[in-house]
Image (cartoon, rainbow, N blue to C red; front, side, top):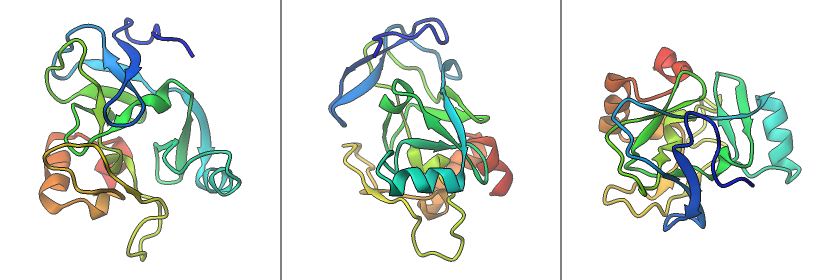
Length: 172
């Protein structure tokens, strides 16, 4: 796995994370609203994603939902971005990682996985993929789940500021 990616000007690299093993870190200061990275991977359907997870070929946290029934099976580098309940970036459009605030060189770049998840199980009390959160943020929710299960104030913050992918913004 390469250490830096020529994807938006070599401003990120892999490093040791306090959140989860490896993480992605800024190699330069990043301005609020700046495009950090374009997530890469294979476009797959919801059914393909579920099959891959059930077969053990993927972890439930590996694919990035980019549409109501469409996922991006992230490449190895893109998978290394960690979740935080207090993220410094978000997914814009389908696959663009953009800074929410100024990020200092050396700081780990994170996004809220829950802001990208709506797994089509409308009547379920929880989504098909729920994970315990260990991000360490002062406002840590303790779990990563679907957008609709975020605390109301957090959902409203993401929607008001458009800090979510297009399919979430259109639905909610």
